[in-house]
Length: 148
Length: 148
DNA sequence: GTTCAACCTCGACCATGCTGGAGGTCAAGC
DNA sequence: GCTTGACCTCCAGCATGGTCGAGGTTGAAC
Image 1 (cartoon, protein in one colour):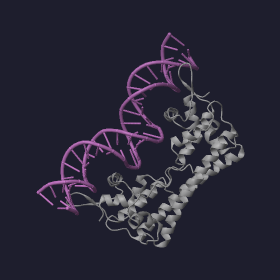
Image 2 (cartoon, each protein chain N blue to C red):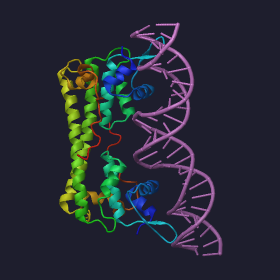
Image 3 (cartoon, chains in turn purple, red, yellow, cyan):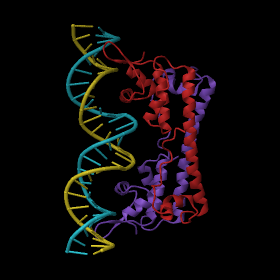
Image 4 (cartoon, each protein chain N blue to C red):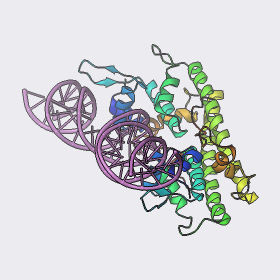
C-alpha cells in the first residue's frame, strides 16, 4: 500500500490533484485507523490513464465514465484494460480524423485563392448563414460529444 | 456594417461571446453615435478562425496572438490570411503528430500484453519514477506549449 | 412622439481543473 | 514522550471561457 506522498512522487500527480480526483470519483483509497489514505499500486495505472486521456482532450468526466467500466472489487486484469484501451483508441482515431478534416480544409484554402470565393470551404464556414438564410447556428464545435 | 445581432445570427456565436471576445481583444467594432457596436463583414472571417482554432484545442490567447499578425488598419488581404493559415497548419500538424504518438503507444500496449511488463511504454509512464528513483515529475502534458 | 425589440454596461455566477492556506492530527524516529 | 514531517479537512481562490440578469438607452417602425 502506498501513501499519498508516494503516489504523488511516483505518478508525478500533485497530492492536491490526487484528493481532487478522489473527490470526483476517479480514484479511490482505503483509510488507516488514523484516517490516512493508502493506495493500491494499481492506482498508478489509473493515474497514467487519466493523465494521458487528458492530453488527448478528454474531460475528467469522460475519464471517470471510462474508468467506471473497470471492476471496483478486484485489481483490473489485462483484459479489463484492453477493453478500455480499445474503446479509447476509437475516440483517439475520431479526434485525429477531425483534425485531419480541419487541416485539409485549411490547406485547400491556402491553395485555392479562397476566402473571397464562394467555393471555398472556409469561406462557406463563415458566411453560409448569409447564403442560406436564417437557421440554426453553425460553427458547432467539431470535437465535442464524440465517443465516436 | 453589421449589428451585433446580425453577427451573432450569421456566425452562430452568441452575442455574449462576441462582447467577451471583444473584451479579450480578439475582435473589434466601431460604435454608432448612440454607442452601439457595428462590425465589418470581415469579423465573420475572424470568428470562423476563432471557432475553428478552438476546436483544435487552441486557447483564446493563442488565437489572439495569431490574429495580432493581421493588420488592424485595413481589411486583411488573401496573403495576410495565407500567412496566418500556414502557421496554423503547422500547429495542427504538431497536434496530429502528438495524437499519433499517443495512439501508437496505446496500440502497442494492447498488443503486447503490457501493463504488467517492464518493456511496456504505458507501464513505463506510470512507474518509471519508481524505477529511476526520485526526480522531476513525469506525465507532463504532451499537447501543451507547442507552437511548433 | 410613442412603442418596443435590440442594444448598452457591469457585475454576479457557472463549470472545469485545479492550487494554496489555515488549523488540526498522525506516526515514526530519537 | 516529544518532535516533526507527512497527513487530514475544509474553504477560498485562480484561470479559462463563457452565460445571465438588472437596470438603463437607442433607433426604426408605426
